[in-house]
Structures are given as C-alpha cells and as structure tokens.
Length: 615
Image (cartoon, rainbow, N blue to C red; front, side):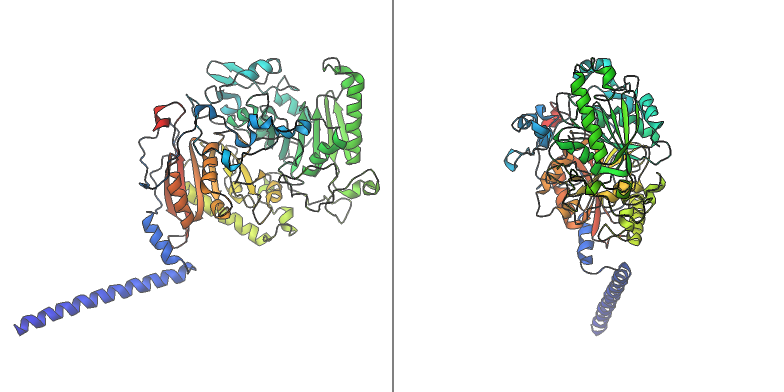
C-alpha cells in the first residue's frame, strides 16, 4: 500500500510540474508579445473581445452583385438586436433635409426654401428606406454614364421637359443620356473642347471643378475622361431627380443651391467654376453669389458663364427678355468681376470666361477702394450654416508678385501625392510634412488589408464611394482610380479642418455633420468607409441616427467598412444585425492585441412592397 501511495504522489507532483511549466511558458509568451506590441492597457480586454467576436482575417461575406443574398447567413445571432422595419413605400426617395413639404414652409427669397431644413428629432424616421420595385445594380462605369435603369429612378418628366435640349431620353427599360445640355445640345464633349481651347484642361492644371445648377451633370460626366473631377450640385426642385440621375450615372453630385448660406466647401478649393444657364442671379444681392464663387475659387482659377445674359444682343428674343434687362444684368456681372479682380480672357458666342488673379499684388489698389467690402472673418473655411455675405475674402499673403497666393499646386496626378501647401505651411494643426507622409503610408497599408477581405474594392464594383471621416484624404488617395471616385467628408465637429488640404490633393469633398442627413438621395453610394466616426460622435447623437442614414444612402448589396475601437464596433455590429446587414469583424492588420478592429458589412437586397420587406 505504501508503494502505491508513493506512486500516486509522484504522478500528482509530475502533473503539477507540467501545469506550472505550461503556465510559465504561456505567461512569458504573452509578456513577450505585449512588449513587442508597443501596447499595454486594454490588451487583455482586446484579446478577450477578439474571442467573443470571433475576429479573424477570413470572411464569409459575399461582396458580389446579385438580387438576393439569402445564401449568406447572419453571423451575429444576437437575439437582443433591435429590428428596424421598412418604411412605407412612398418614402422610397426620402431626403430628410430636403423634404418638399417642409421646404414650402420657408421663405422663397434667396432660395431659402431650397436649402437644408432637417427634421426635428420627433419627426425623424426610424425605419429602413425601401428601394423601388425592380431595382437593379447600376451599369458599370463607363456604361453608366450613358445608361440608367428606369426601375432605379422611375421618373420620365425630364425626358419631356428637356426633350429638345438632349438631356435624357427614355428607351425601352433604360434612360439614355446623350450628353446634351441646355447650352450644349450638340453634346458636352464639343462644349468642353471649346473651353479647353482657352482653359488648360488637358495638362492637369485644372483638376477640381464646381458645377453650379448642374442638371443631370453631363458636364461633369464628360470631364471625367479628361481627368477633371467636378463637384456638381442642384436643388431638389421641379426638375425631378436631376441629382439622383447624376449619381446613378456614377457622377459626383449633391443636392444644393446658392441661396443664403455659404457653400459647404473650403476656400480656394476649385480650379474651375461653371454655370451653364444655371439661372443664378449673379448680379443680384450686391454680387454676393459671385463673391461666394470667388471664395471657393483657387487663385488663378477660371469662372465659366454660358447662356443668359452672355451675347444678349443676338439671343434676347429667344430668351424672352428685353434688351435693357439683359444688358443691365451683364453690366453688373462685368462690374462685380472687375471688383473681384477677375480678368476676362474671352467671350465666344454665348460663353464668357474670367480668370481670378493669382494674388492681391496683381490687383493693386483693390483693398483701398471704398466700395470693396472685405470680409471681417479671418477663417474663410468656417461655413457650416453660416450666412453668405456680400464681402470679398482676402488672399493669403505672398512675398513676390509672381507667387500664387496659398501656394502653387502641381499638375494632377502628381498633385495627389505632393505635400499640400496648407500642410507645408503649417496651416493644418497637428500635421507636419513628416506626419502627412506617414499618414499616406498608413492608409496604403490599411487599404491593402481591406483588399484581402473585399477583393472587389478597386475593380469597378464600387463606383460611388464615401469616406465619412476623411482626415487629409489618404484613404481616397490610396484607392484612387478612374474606375471610382470618393466623396471625402470632413465632419464639422472634427478637431482639424482638413478639407482644404484634400482639395489641394486633387480630390473632392464636403463639410457635414453626421447628426443630420446627408444632402443626397437614397441608394446613391456603393461603398461607405467609416473611420472613427462613431467614436467621434459619442454623446453627440444616437448610433441609430447615423446607421440609418448610412443605410438610406447605401445601395442594396452595397458595402461598408467600419474602423473603430472594439467596444464601439460591438454596439454597431449588434444594431446593424437589425438592419438587414450581414457583418463580420476582423482584427487590425497588426494583430489581435490592437484594440482597434475592422467591421465589414454588406446590405442585403430587398425592395418595397415585397415579402422580404415585410419580414
């Protein structure tokens, strides 16, 4: 018995030794990993959460385009997730901050009623906006420039109203866009050729453009093949769905108007601004609208005005206006252009082109003239819901008459990777030349990791892409391709106002507050990138407000990439499971010890009035 007892004790001691040895190995392995990671606090939490959320680098998400994705199951399995029901079918084109009924309660002077008027919390819809019956994926670019499925935007009014102007034609089950416009019935290409005979469009000098009152954005659509990226805007008015058509074609556009509020763009953003019979009263309000164009126009940039009142002596009868009226309007425009120190470089037929001077020194005495009202605000980029003023913004200072105020830009595409002048001069707090270059390297690394999960990222599968918190545009720069474009959004509550630097890279974007709806139609973006958005808006507004807005503007079968802290993403993932989104969380590309995670999501296909919309 004594021998058996000693044998049992030996086995116990041996087992205990093995357990201690394994424990020590695990401890030193974790300690070594912790030391190598450079992290500390929160690592144990991150590891635990990684296991809970089943983070890995593989995914069962299906990013392909098809009508139904019933073959892909929801991996959440969260019984506590709130389920959002479909909205009524009549909300299929709901634009919360541009609602027609609400608009009619506001004054019509200065187009106030066509500006943003968002619903109070008590009137917000907490439901999913349905796609119209028969909705299909848009045609791939460049076919989408010329054809749009009728089922996606089932409105024929423009085919009648603009029939002789060649805007859009209805053929079978599609709309065809011949490339015409009110001022270019022979096509946008020939019209742009005329502009290019005066403006250096071909060599990359002109990269960013602003189209005011864009119609269906054919001007912007045909500039794209010349490597010019146009931000087009038009109001939601009697020309039904014009901005919706533009986005369905794969052309950048937003709902907007030159009214009483400043445009949501930074100063010195655009190389060219354009108005083709846009019906904006340029000579009214003491030249306020021309002064707003001057604010967003880069020194040395071009302003194109075609249509009334240009060449009024020939066309006044066709425009059904008196000679005196048209002559007076053009005289005012010429006077304000001189006041702004724009140089008129040509007038050909119904097209007039001015060029903004490169600095204040090239316009001597302007600031001494008593009739020139210089803006008091020193921050020309402070624009969100700020009243437009009839004042002239000052040029940045220069050290010589030949220097371009604000800095000389490289031609595109070199401009994309060059250091933006705003960063080189230290005008963007928190960014140096070195940190900017590091930011670019970091996002190239992030995008490379994204492509391992979503192989369709830069194949043309996603044409209209939005970055909800764009920083200095490094995500957009990392995926830049003729197959896609990115709407770079800089939140109005962001600590750094970086949108000016984004434009200096030859990219486009807009200021926005994500506690409100974006100025676009439903189903207008193919992919949305949300880096740190929900951490930024913690305690500012509800998660569901932002997620439901993302769902509204995302196409069926569109994708979302969230990048945020793990605790935030768990909440987002839970809520997304009640929105007909399929999600998968993965680790940071540097490993599971990094508290930041990535959540991939795909919006399922469903349409209004179907059984799937009622489930």
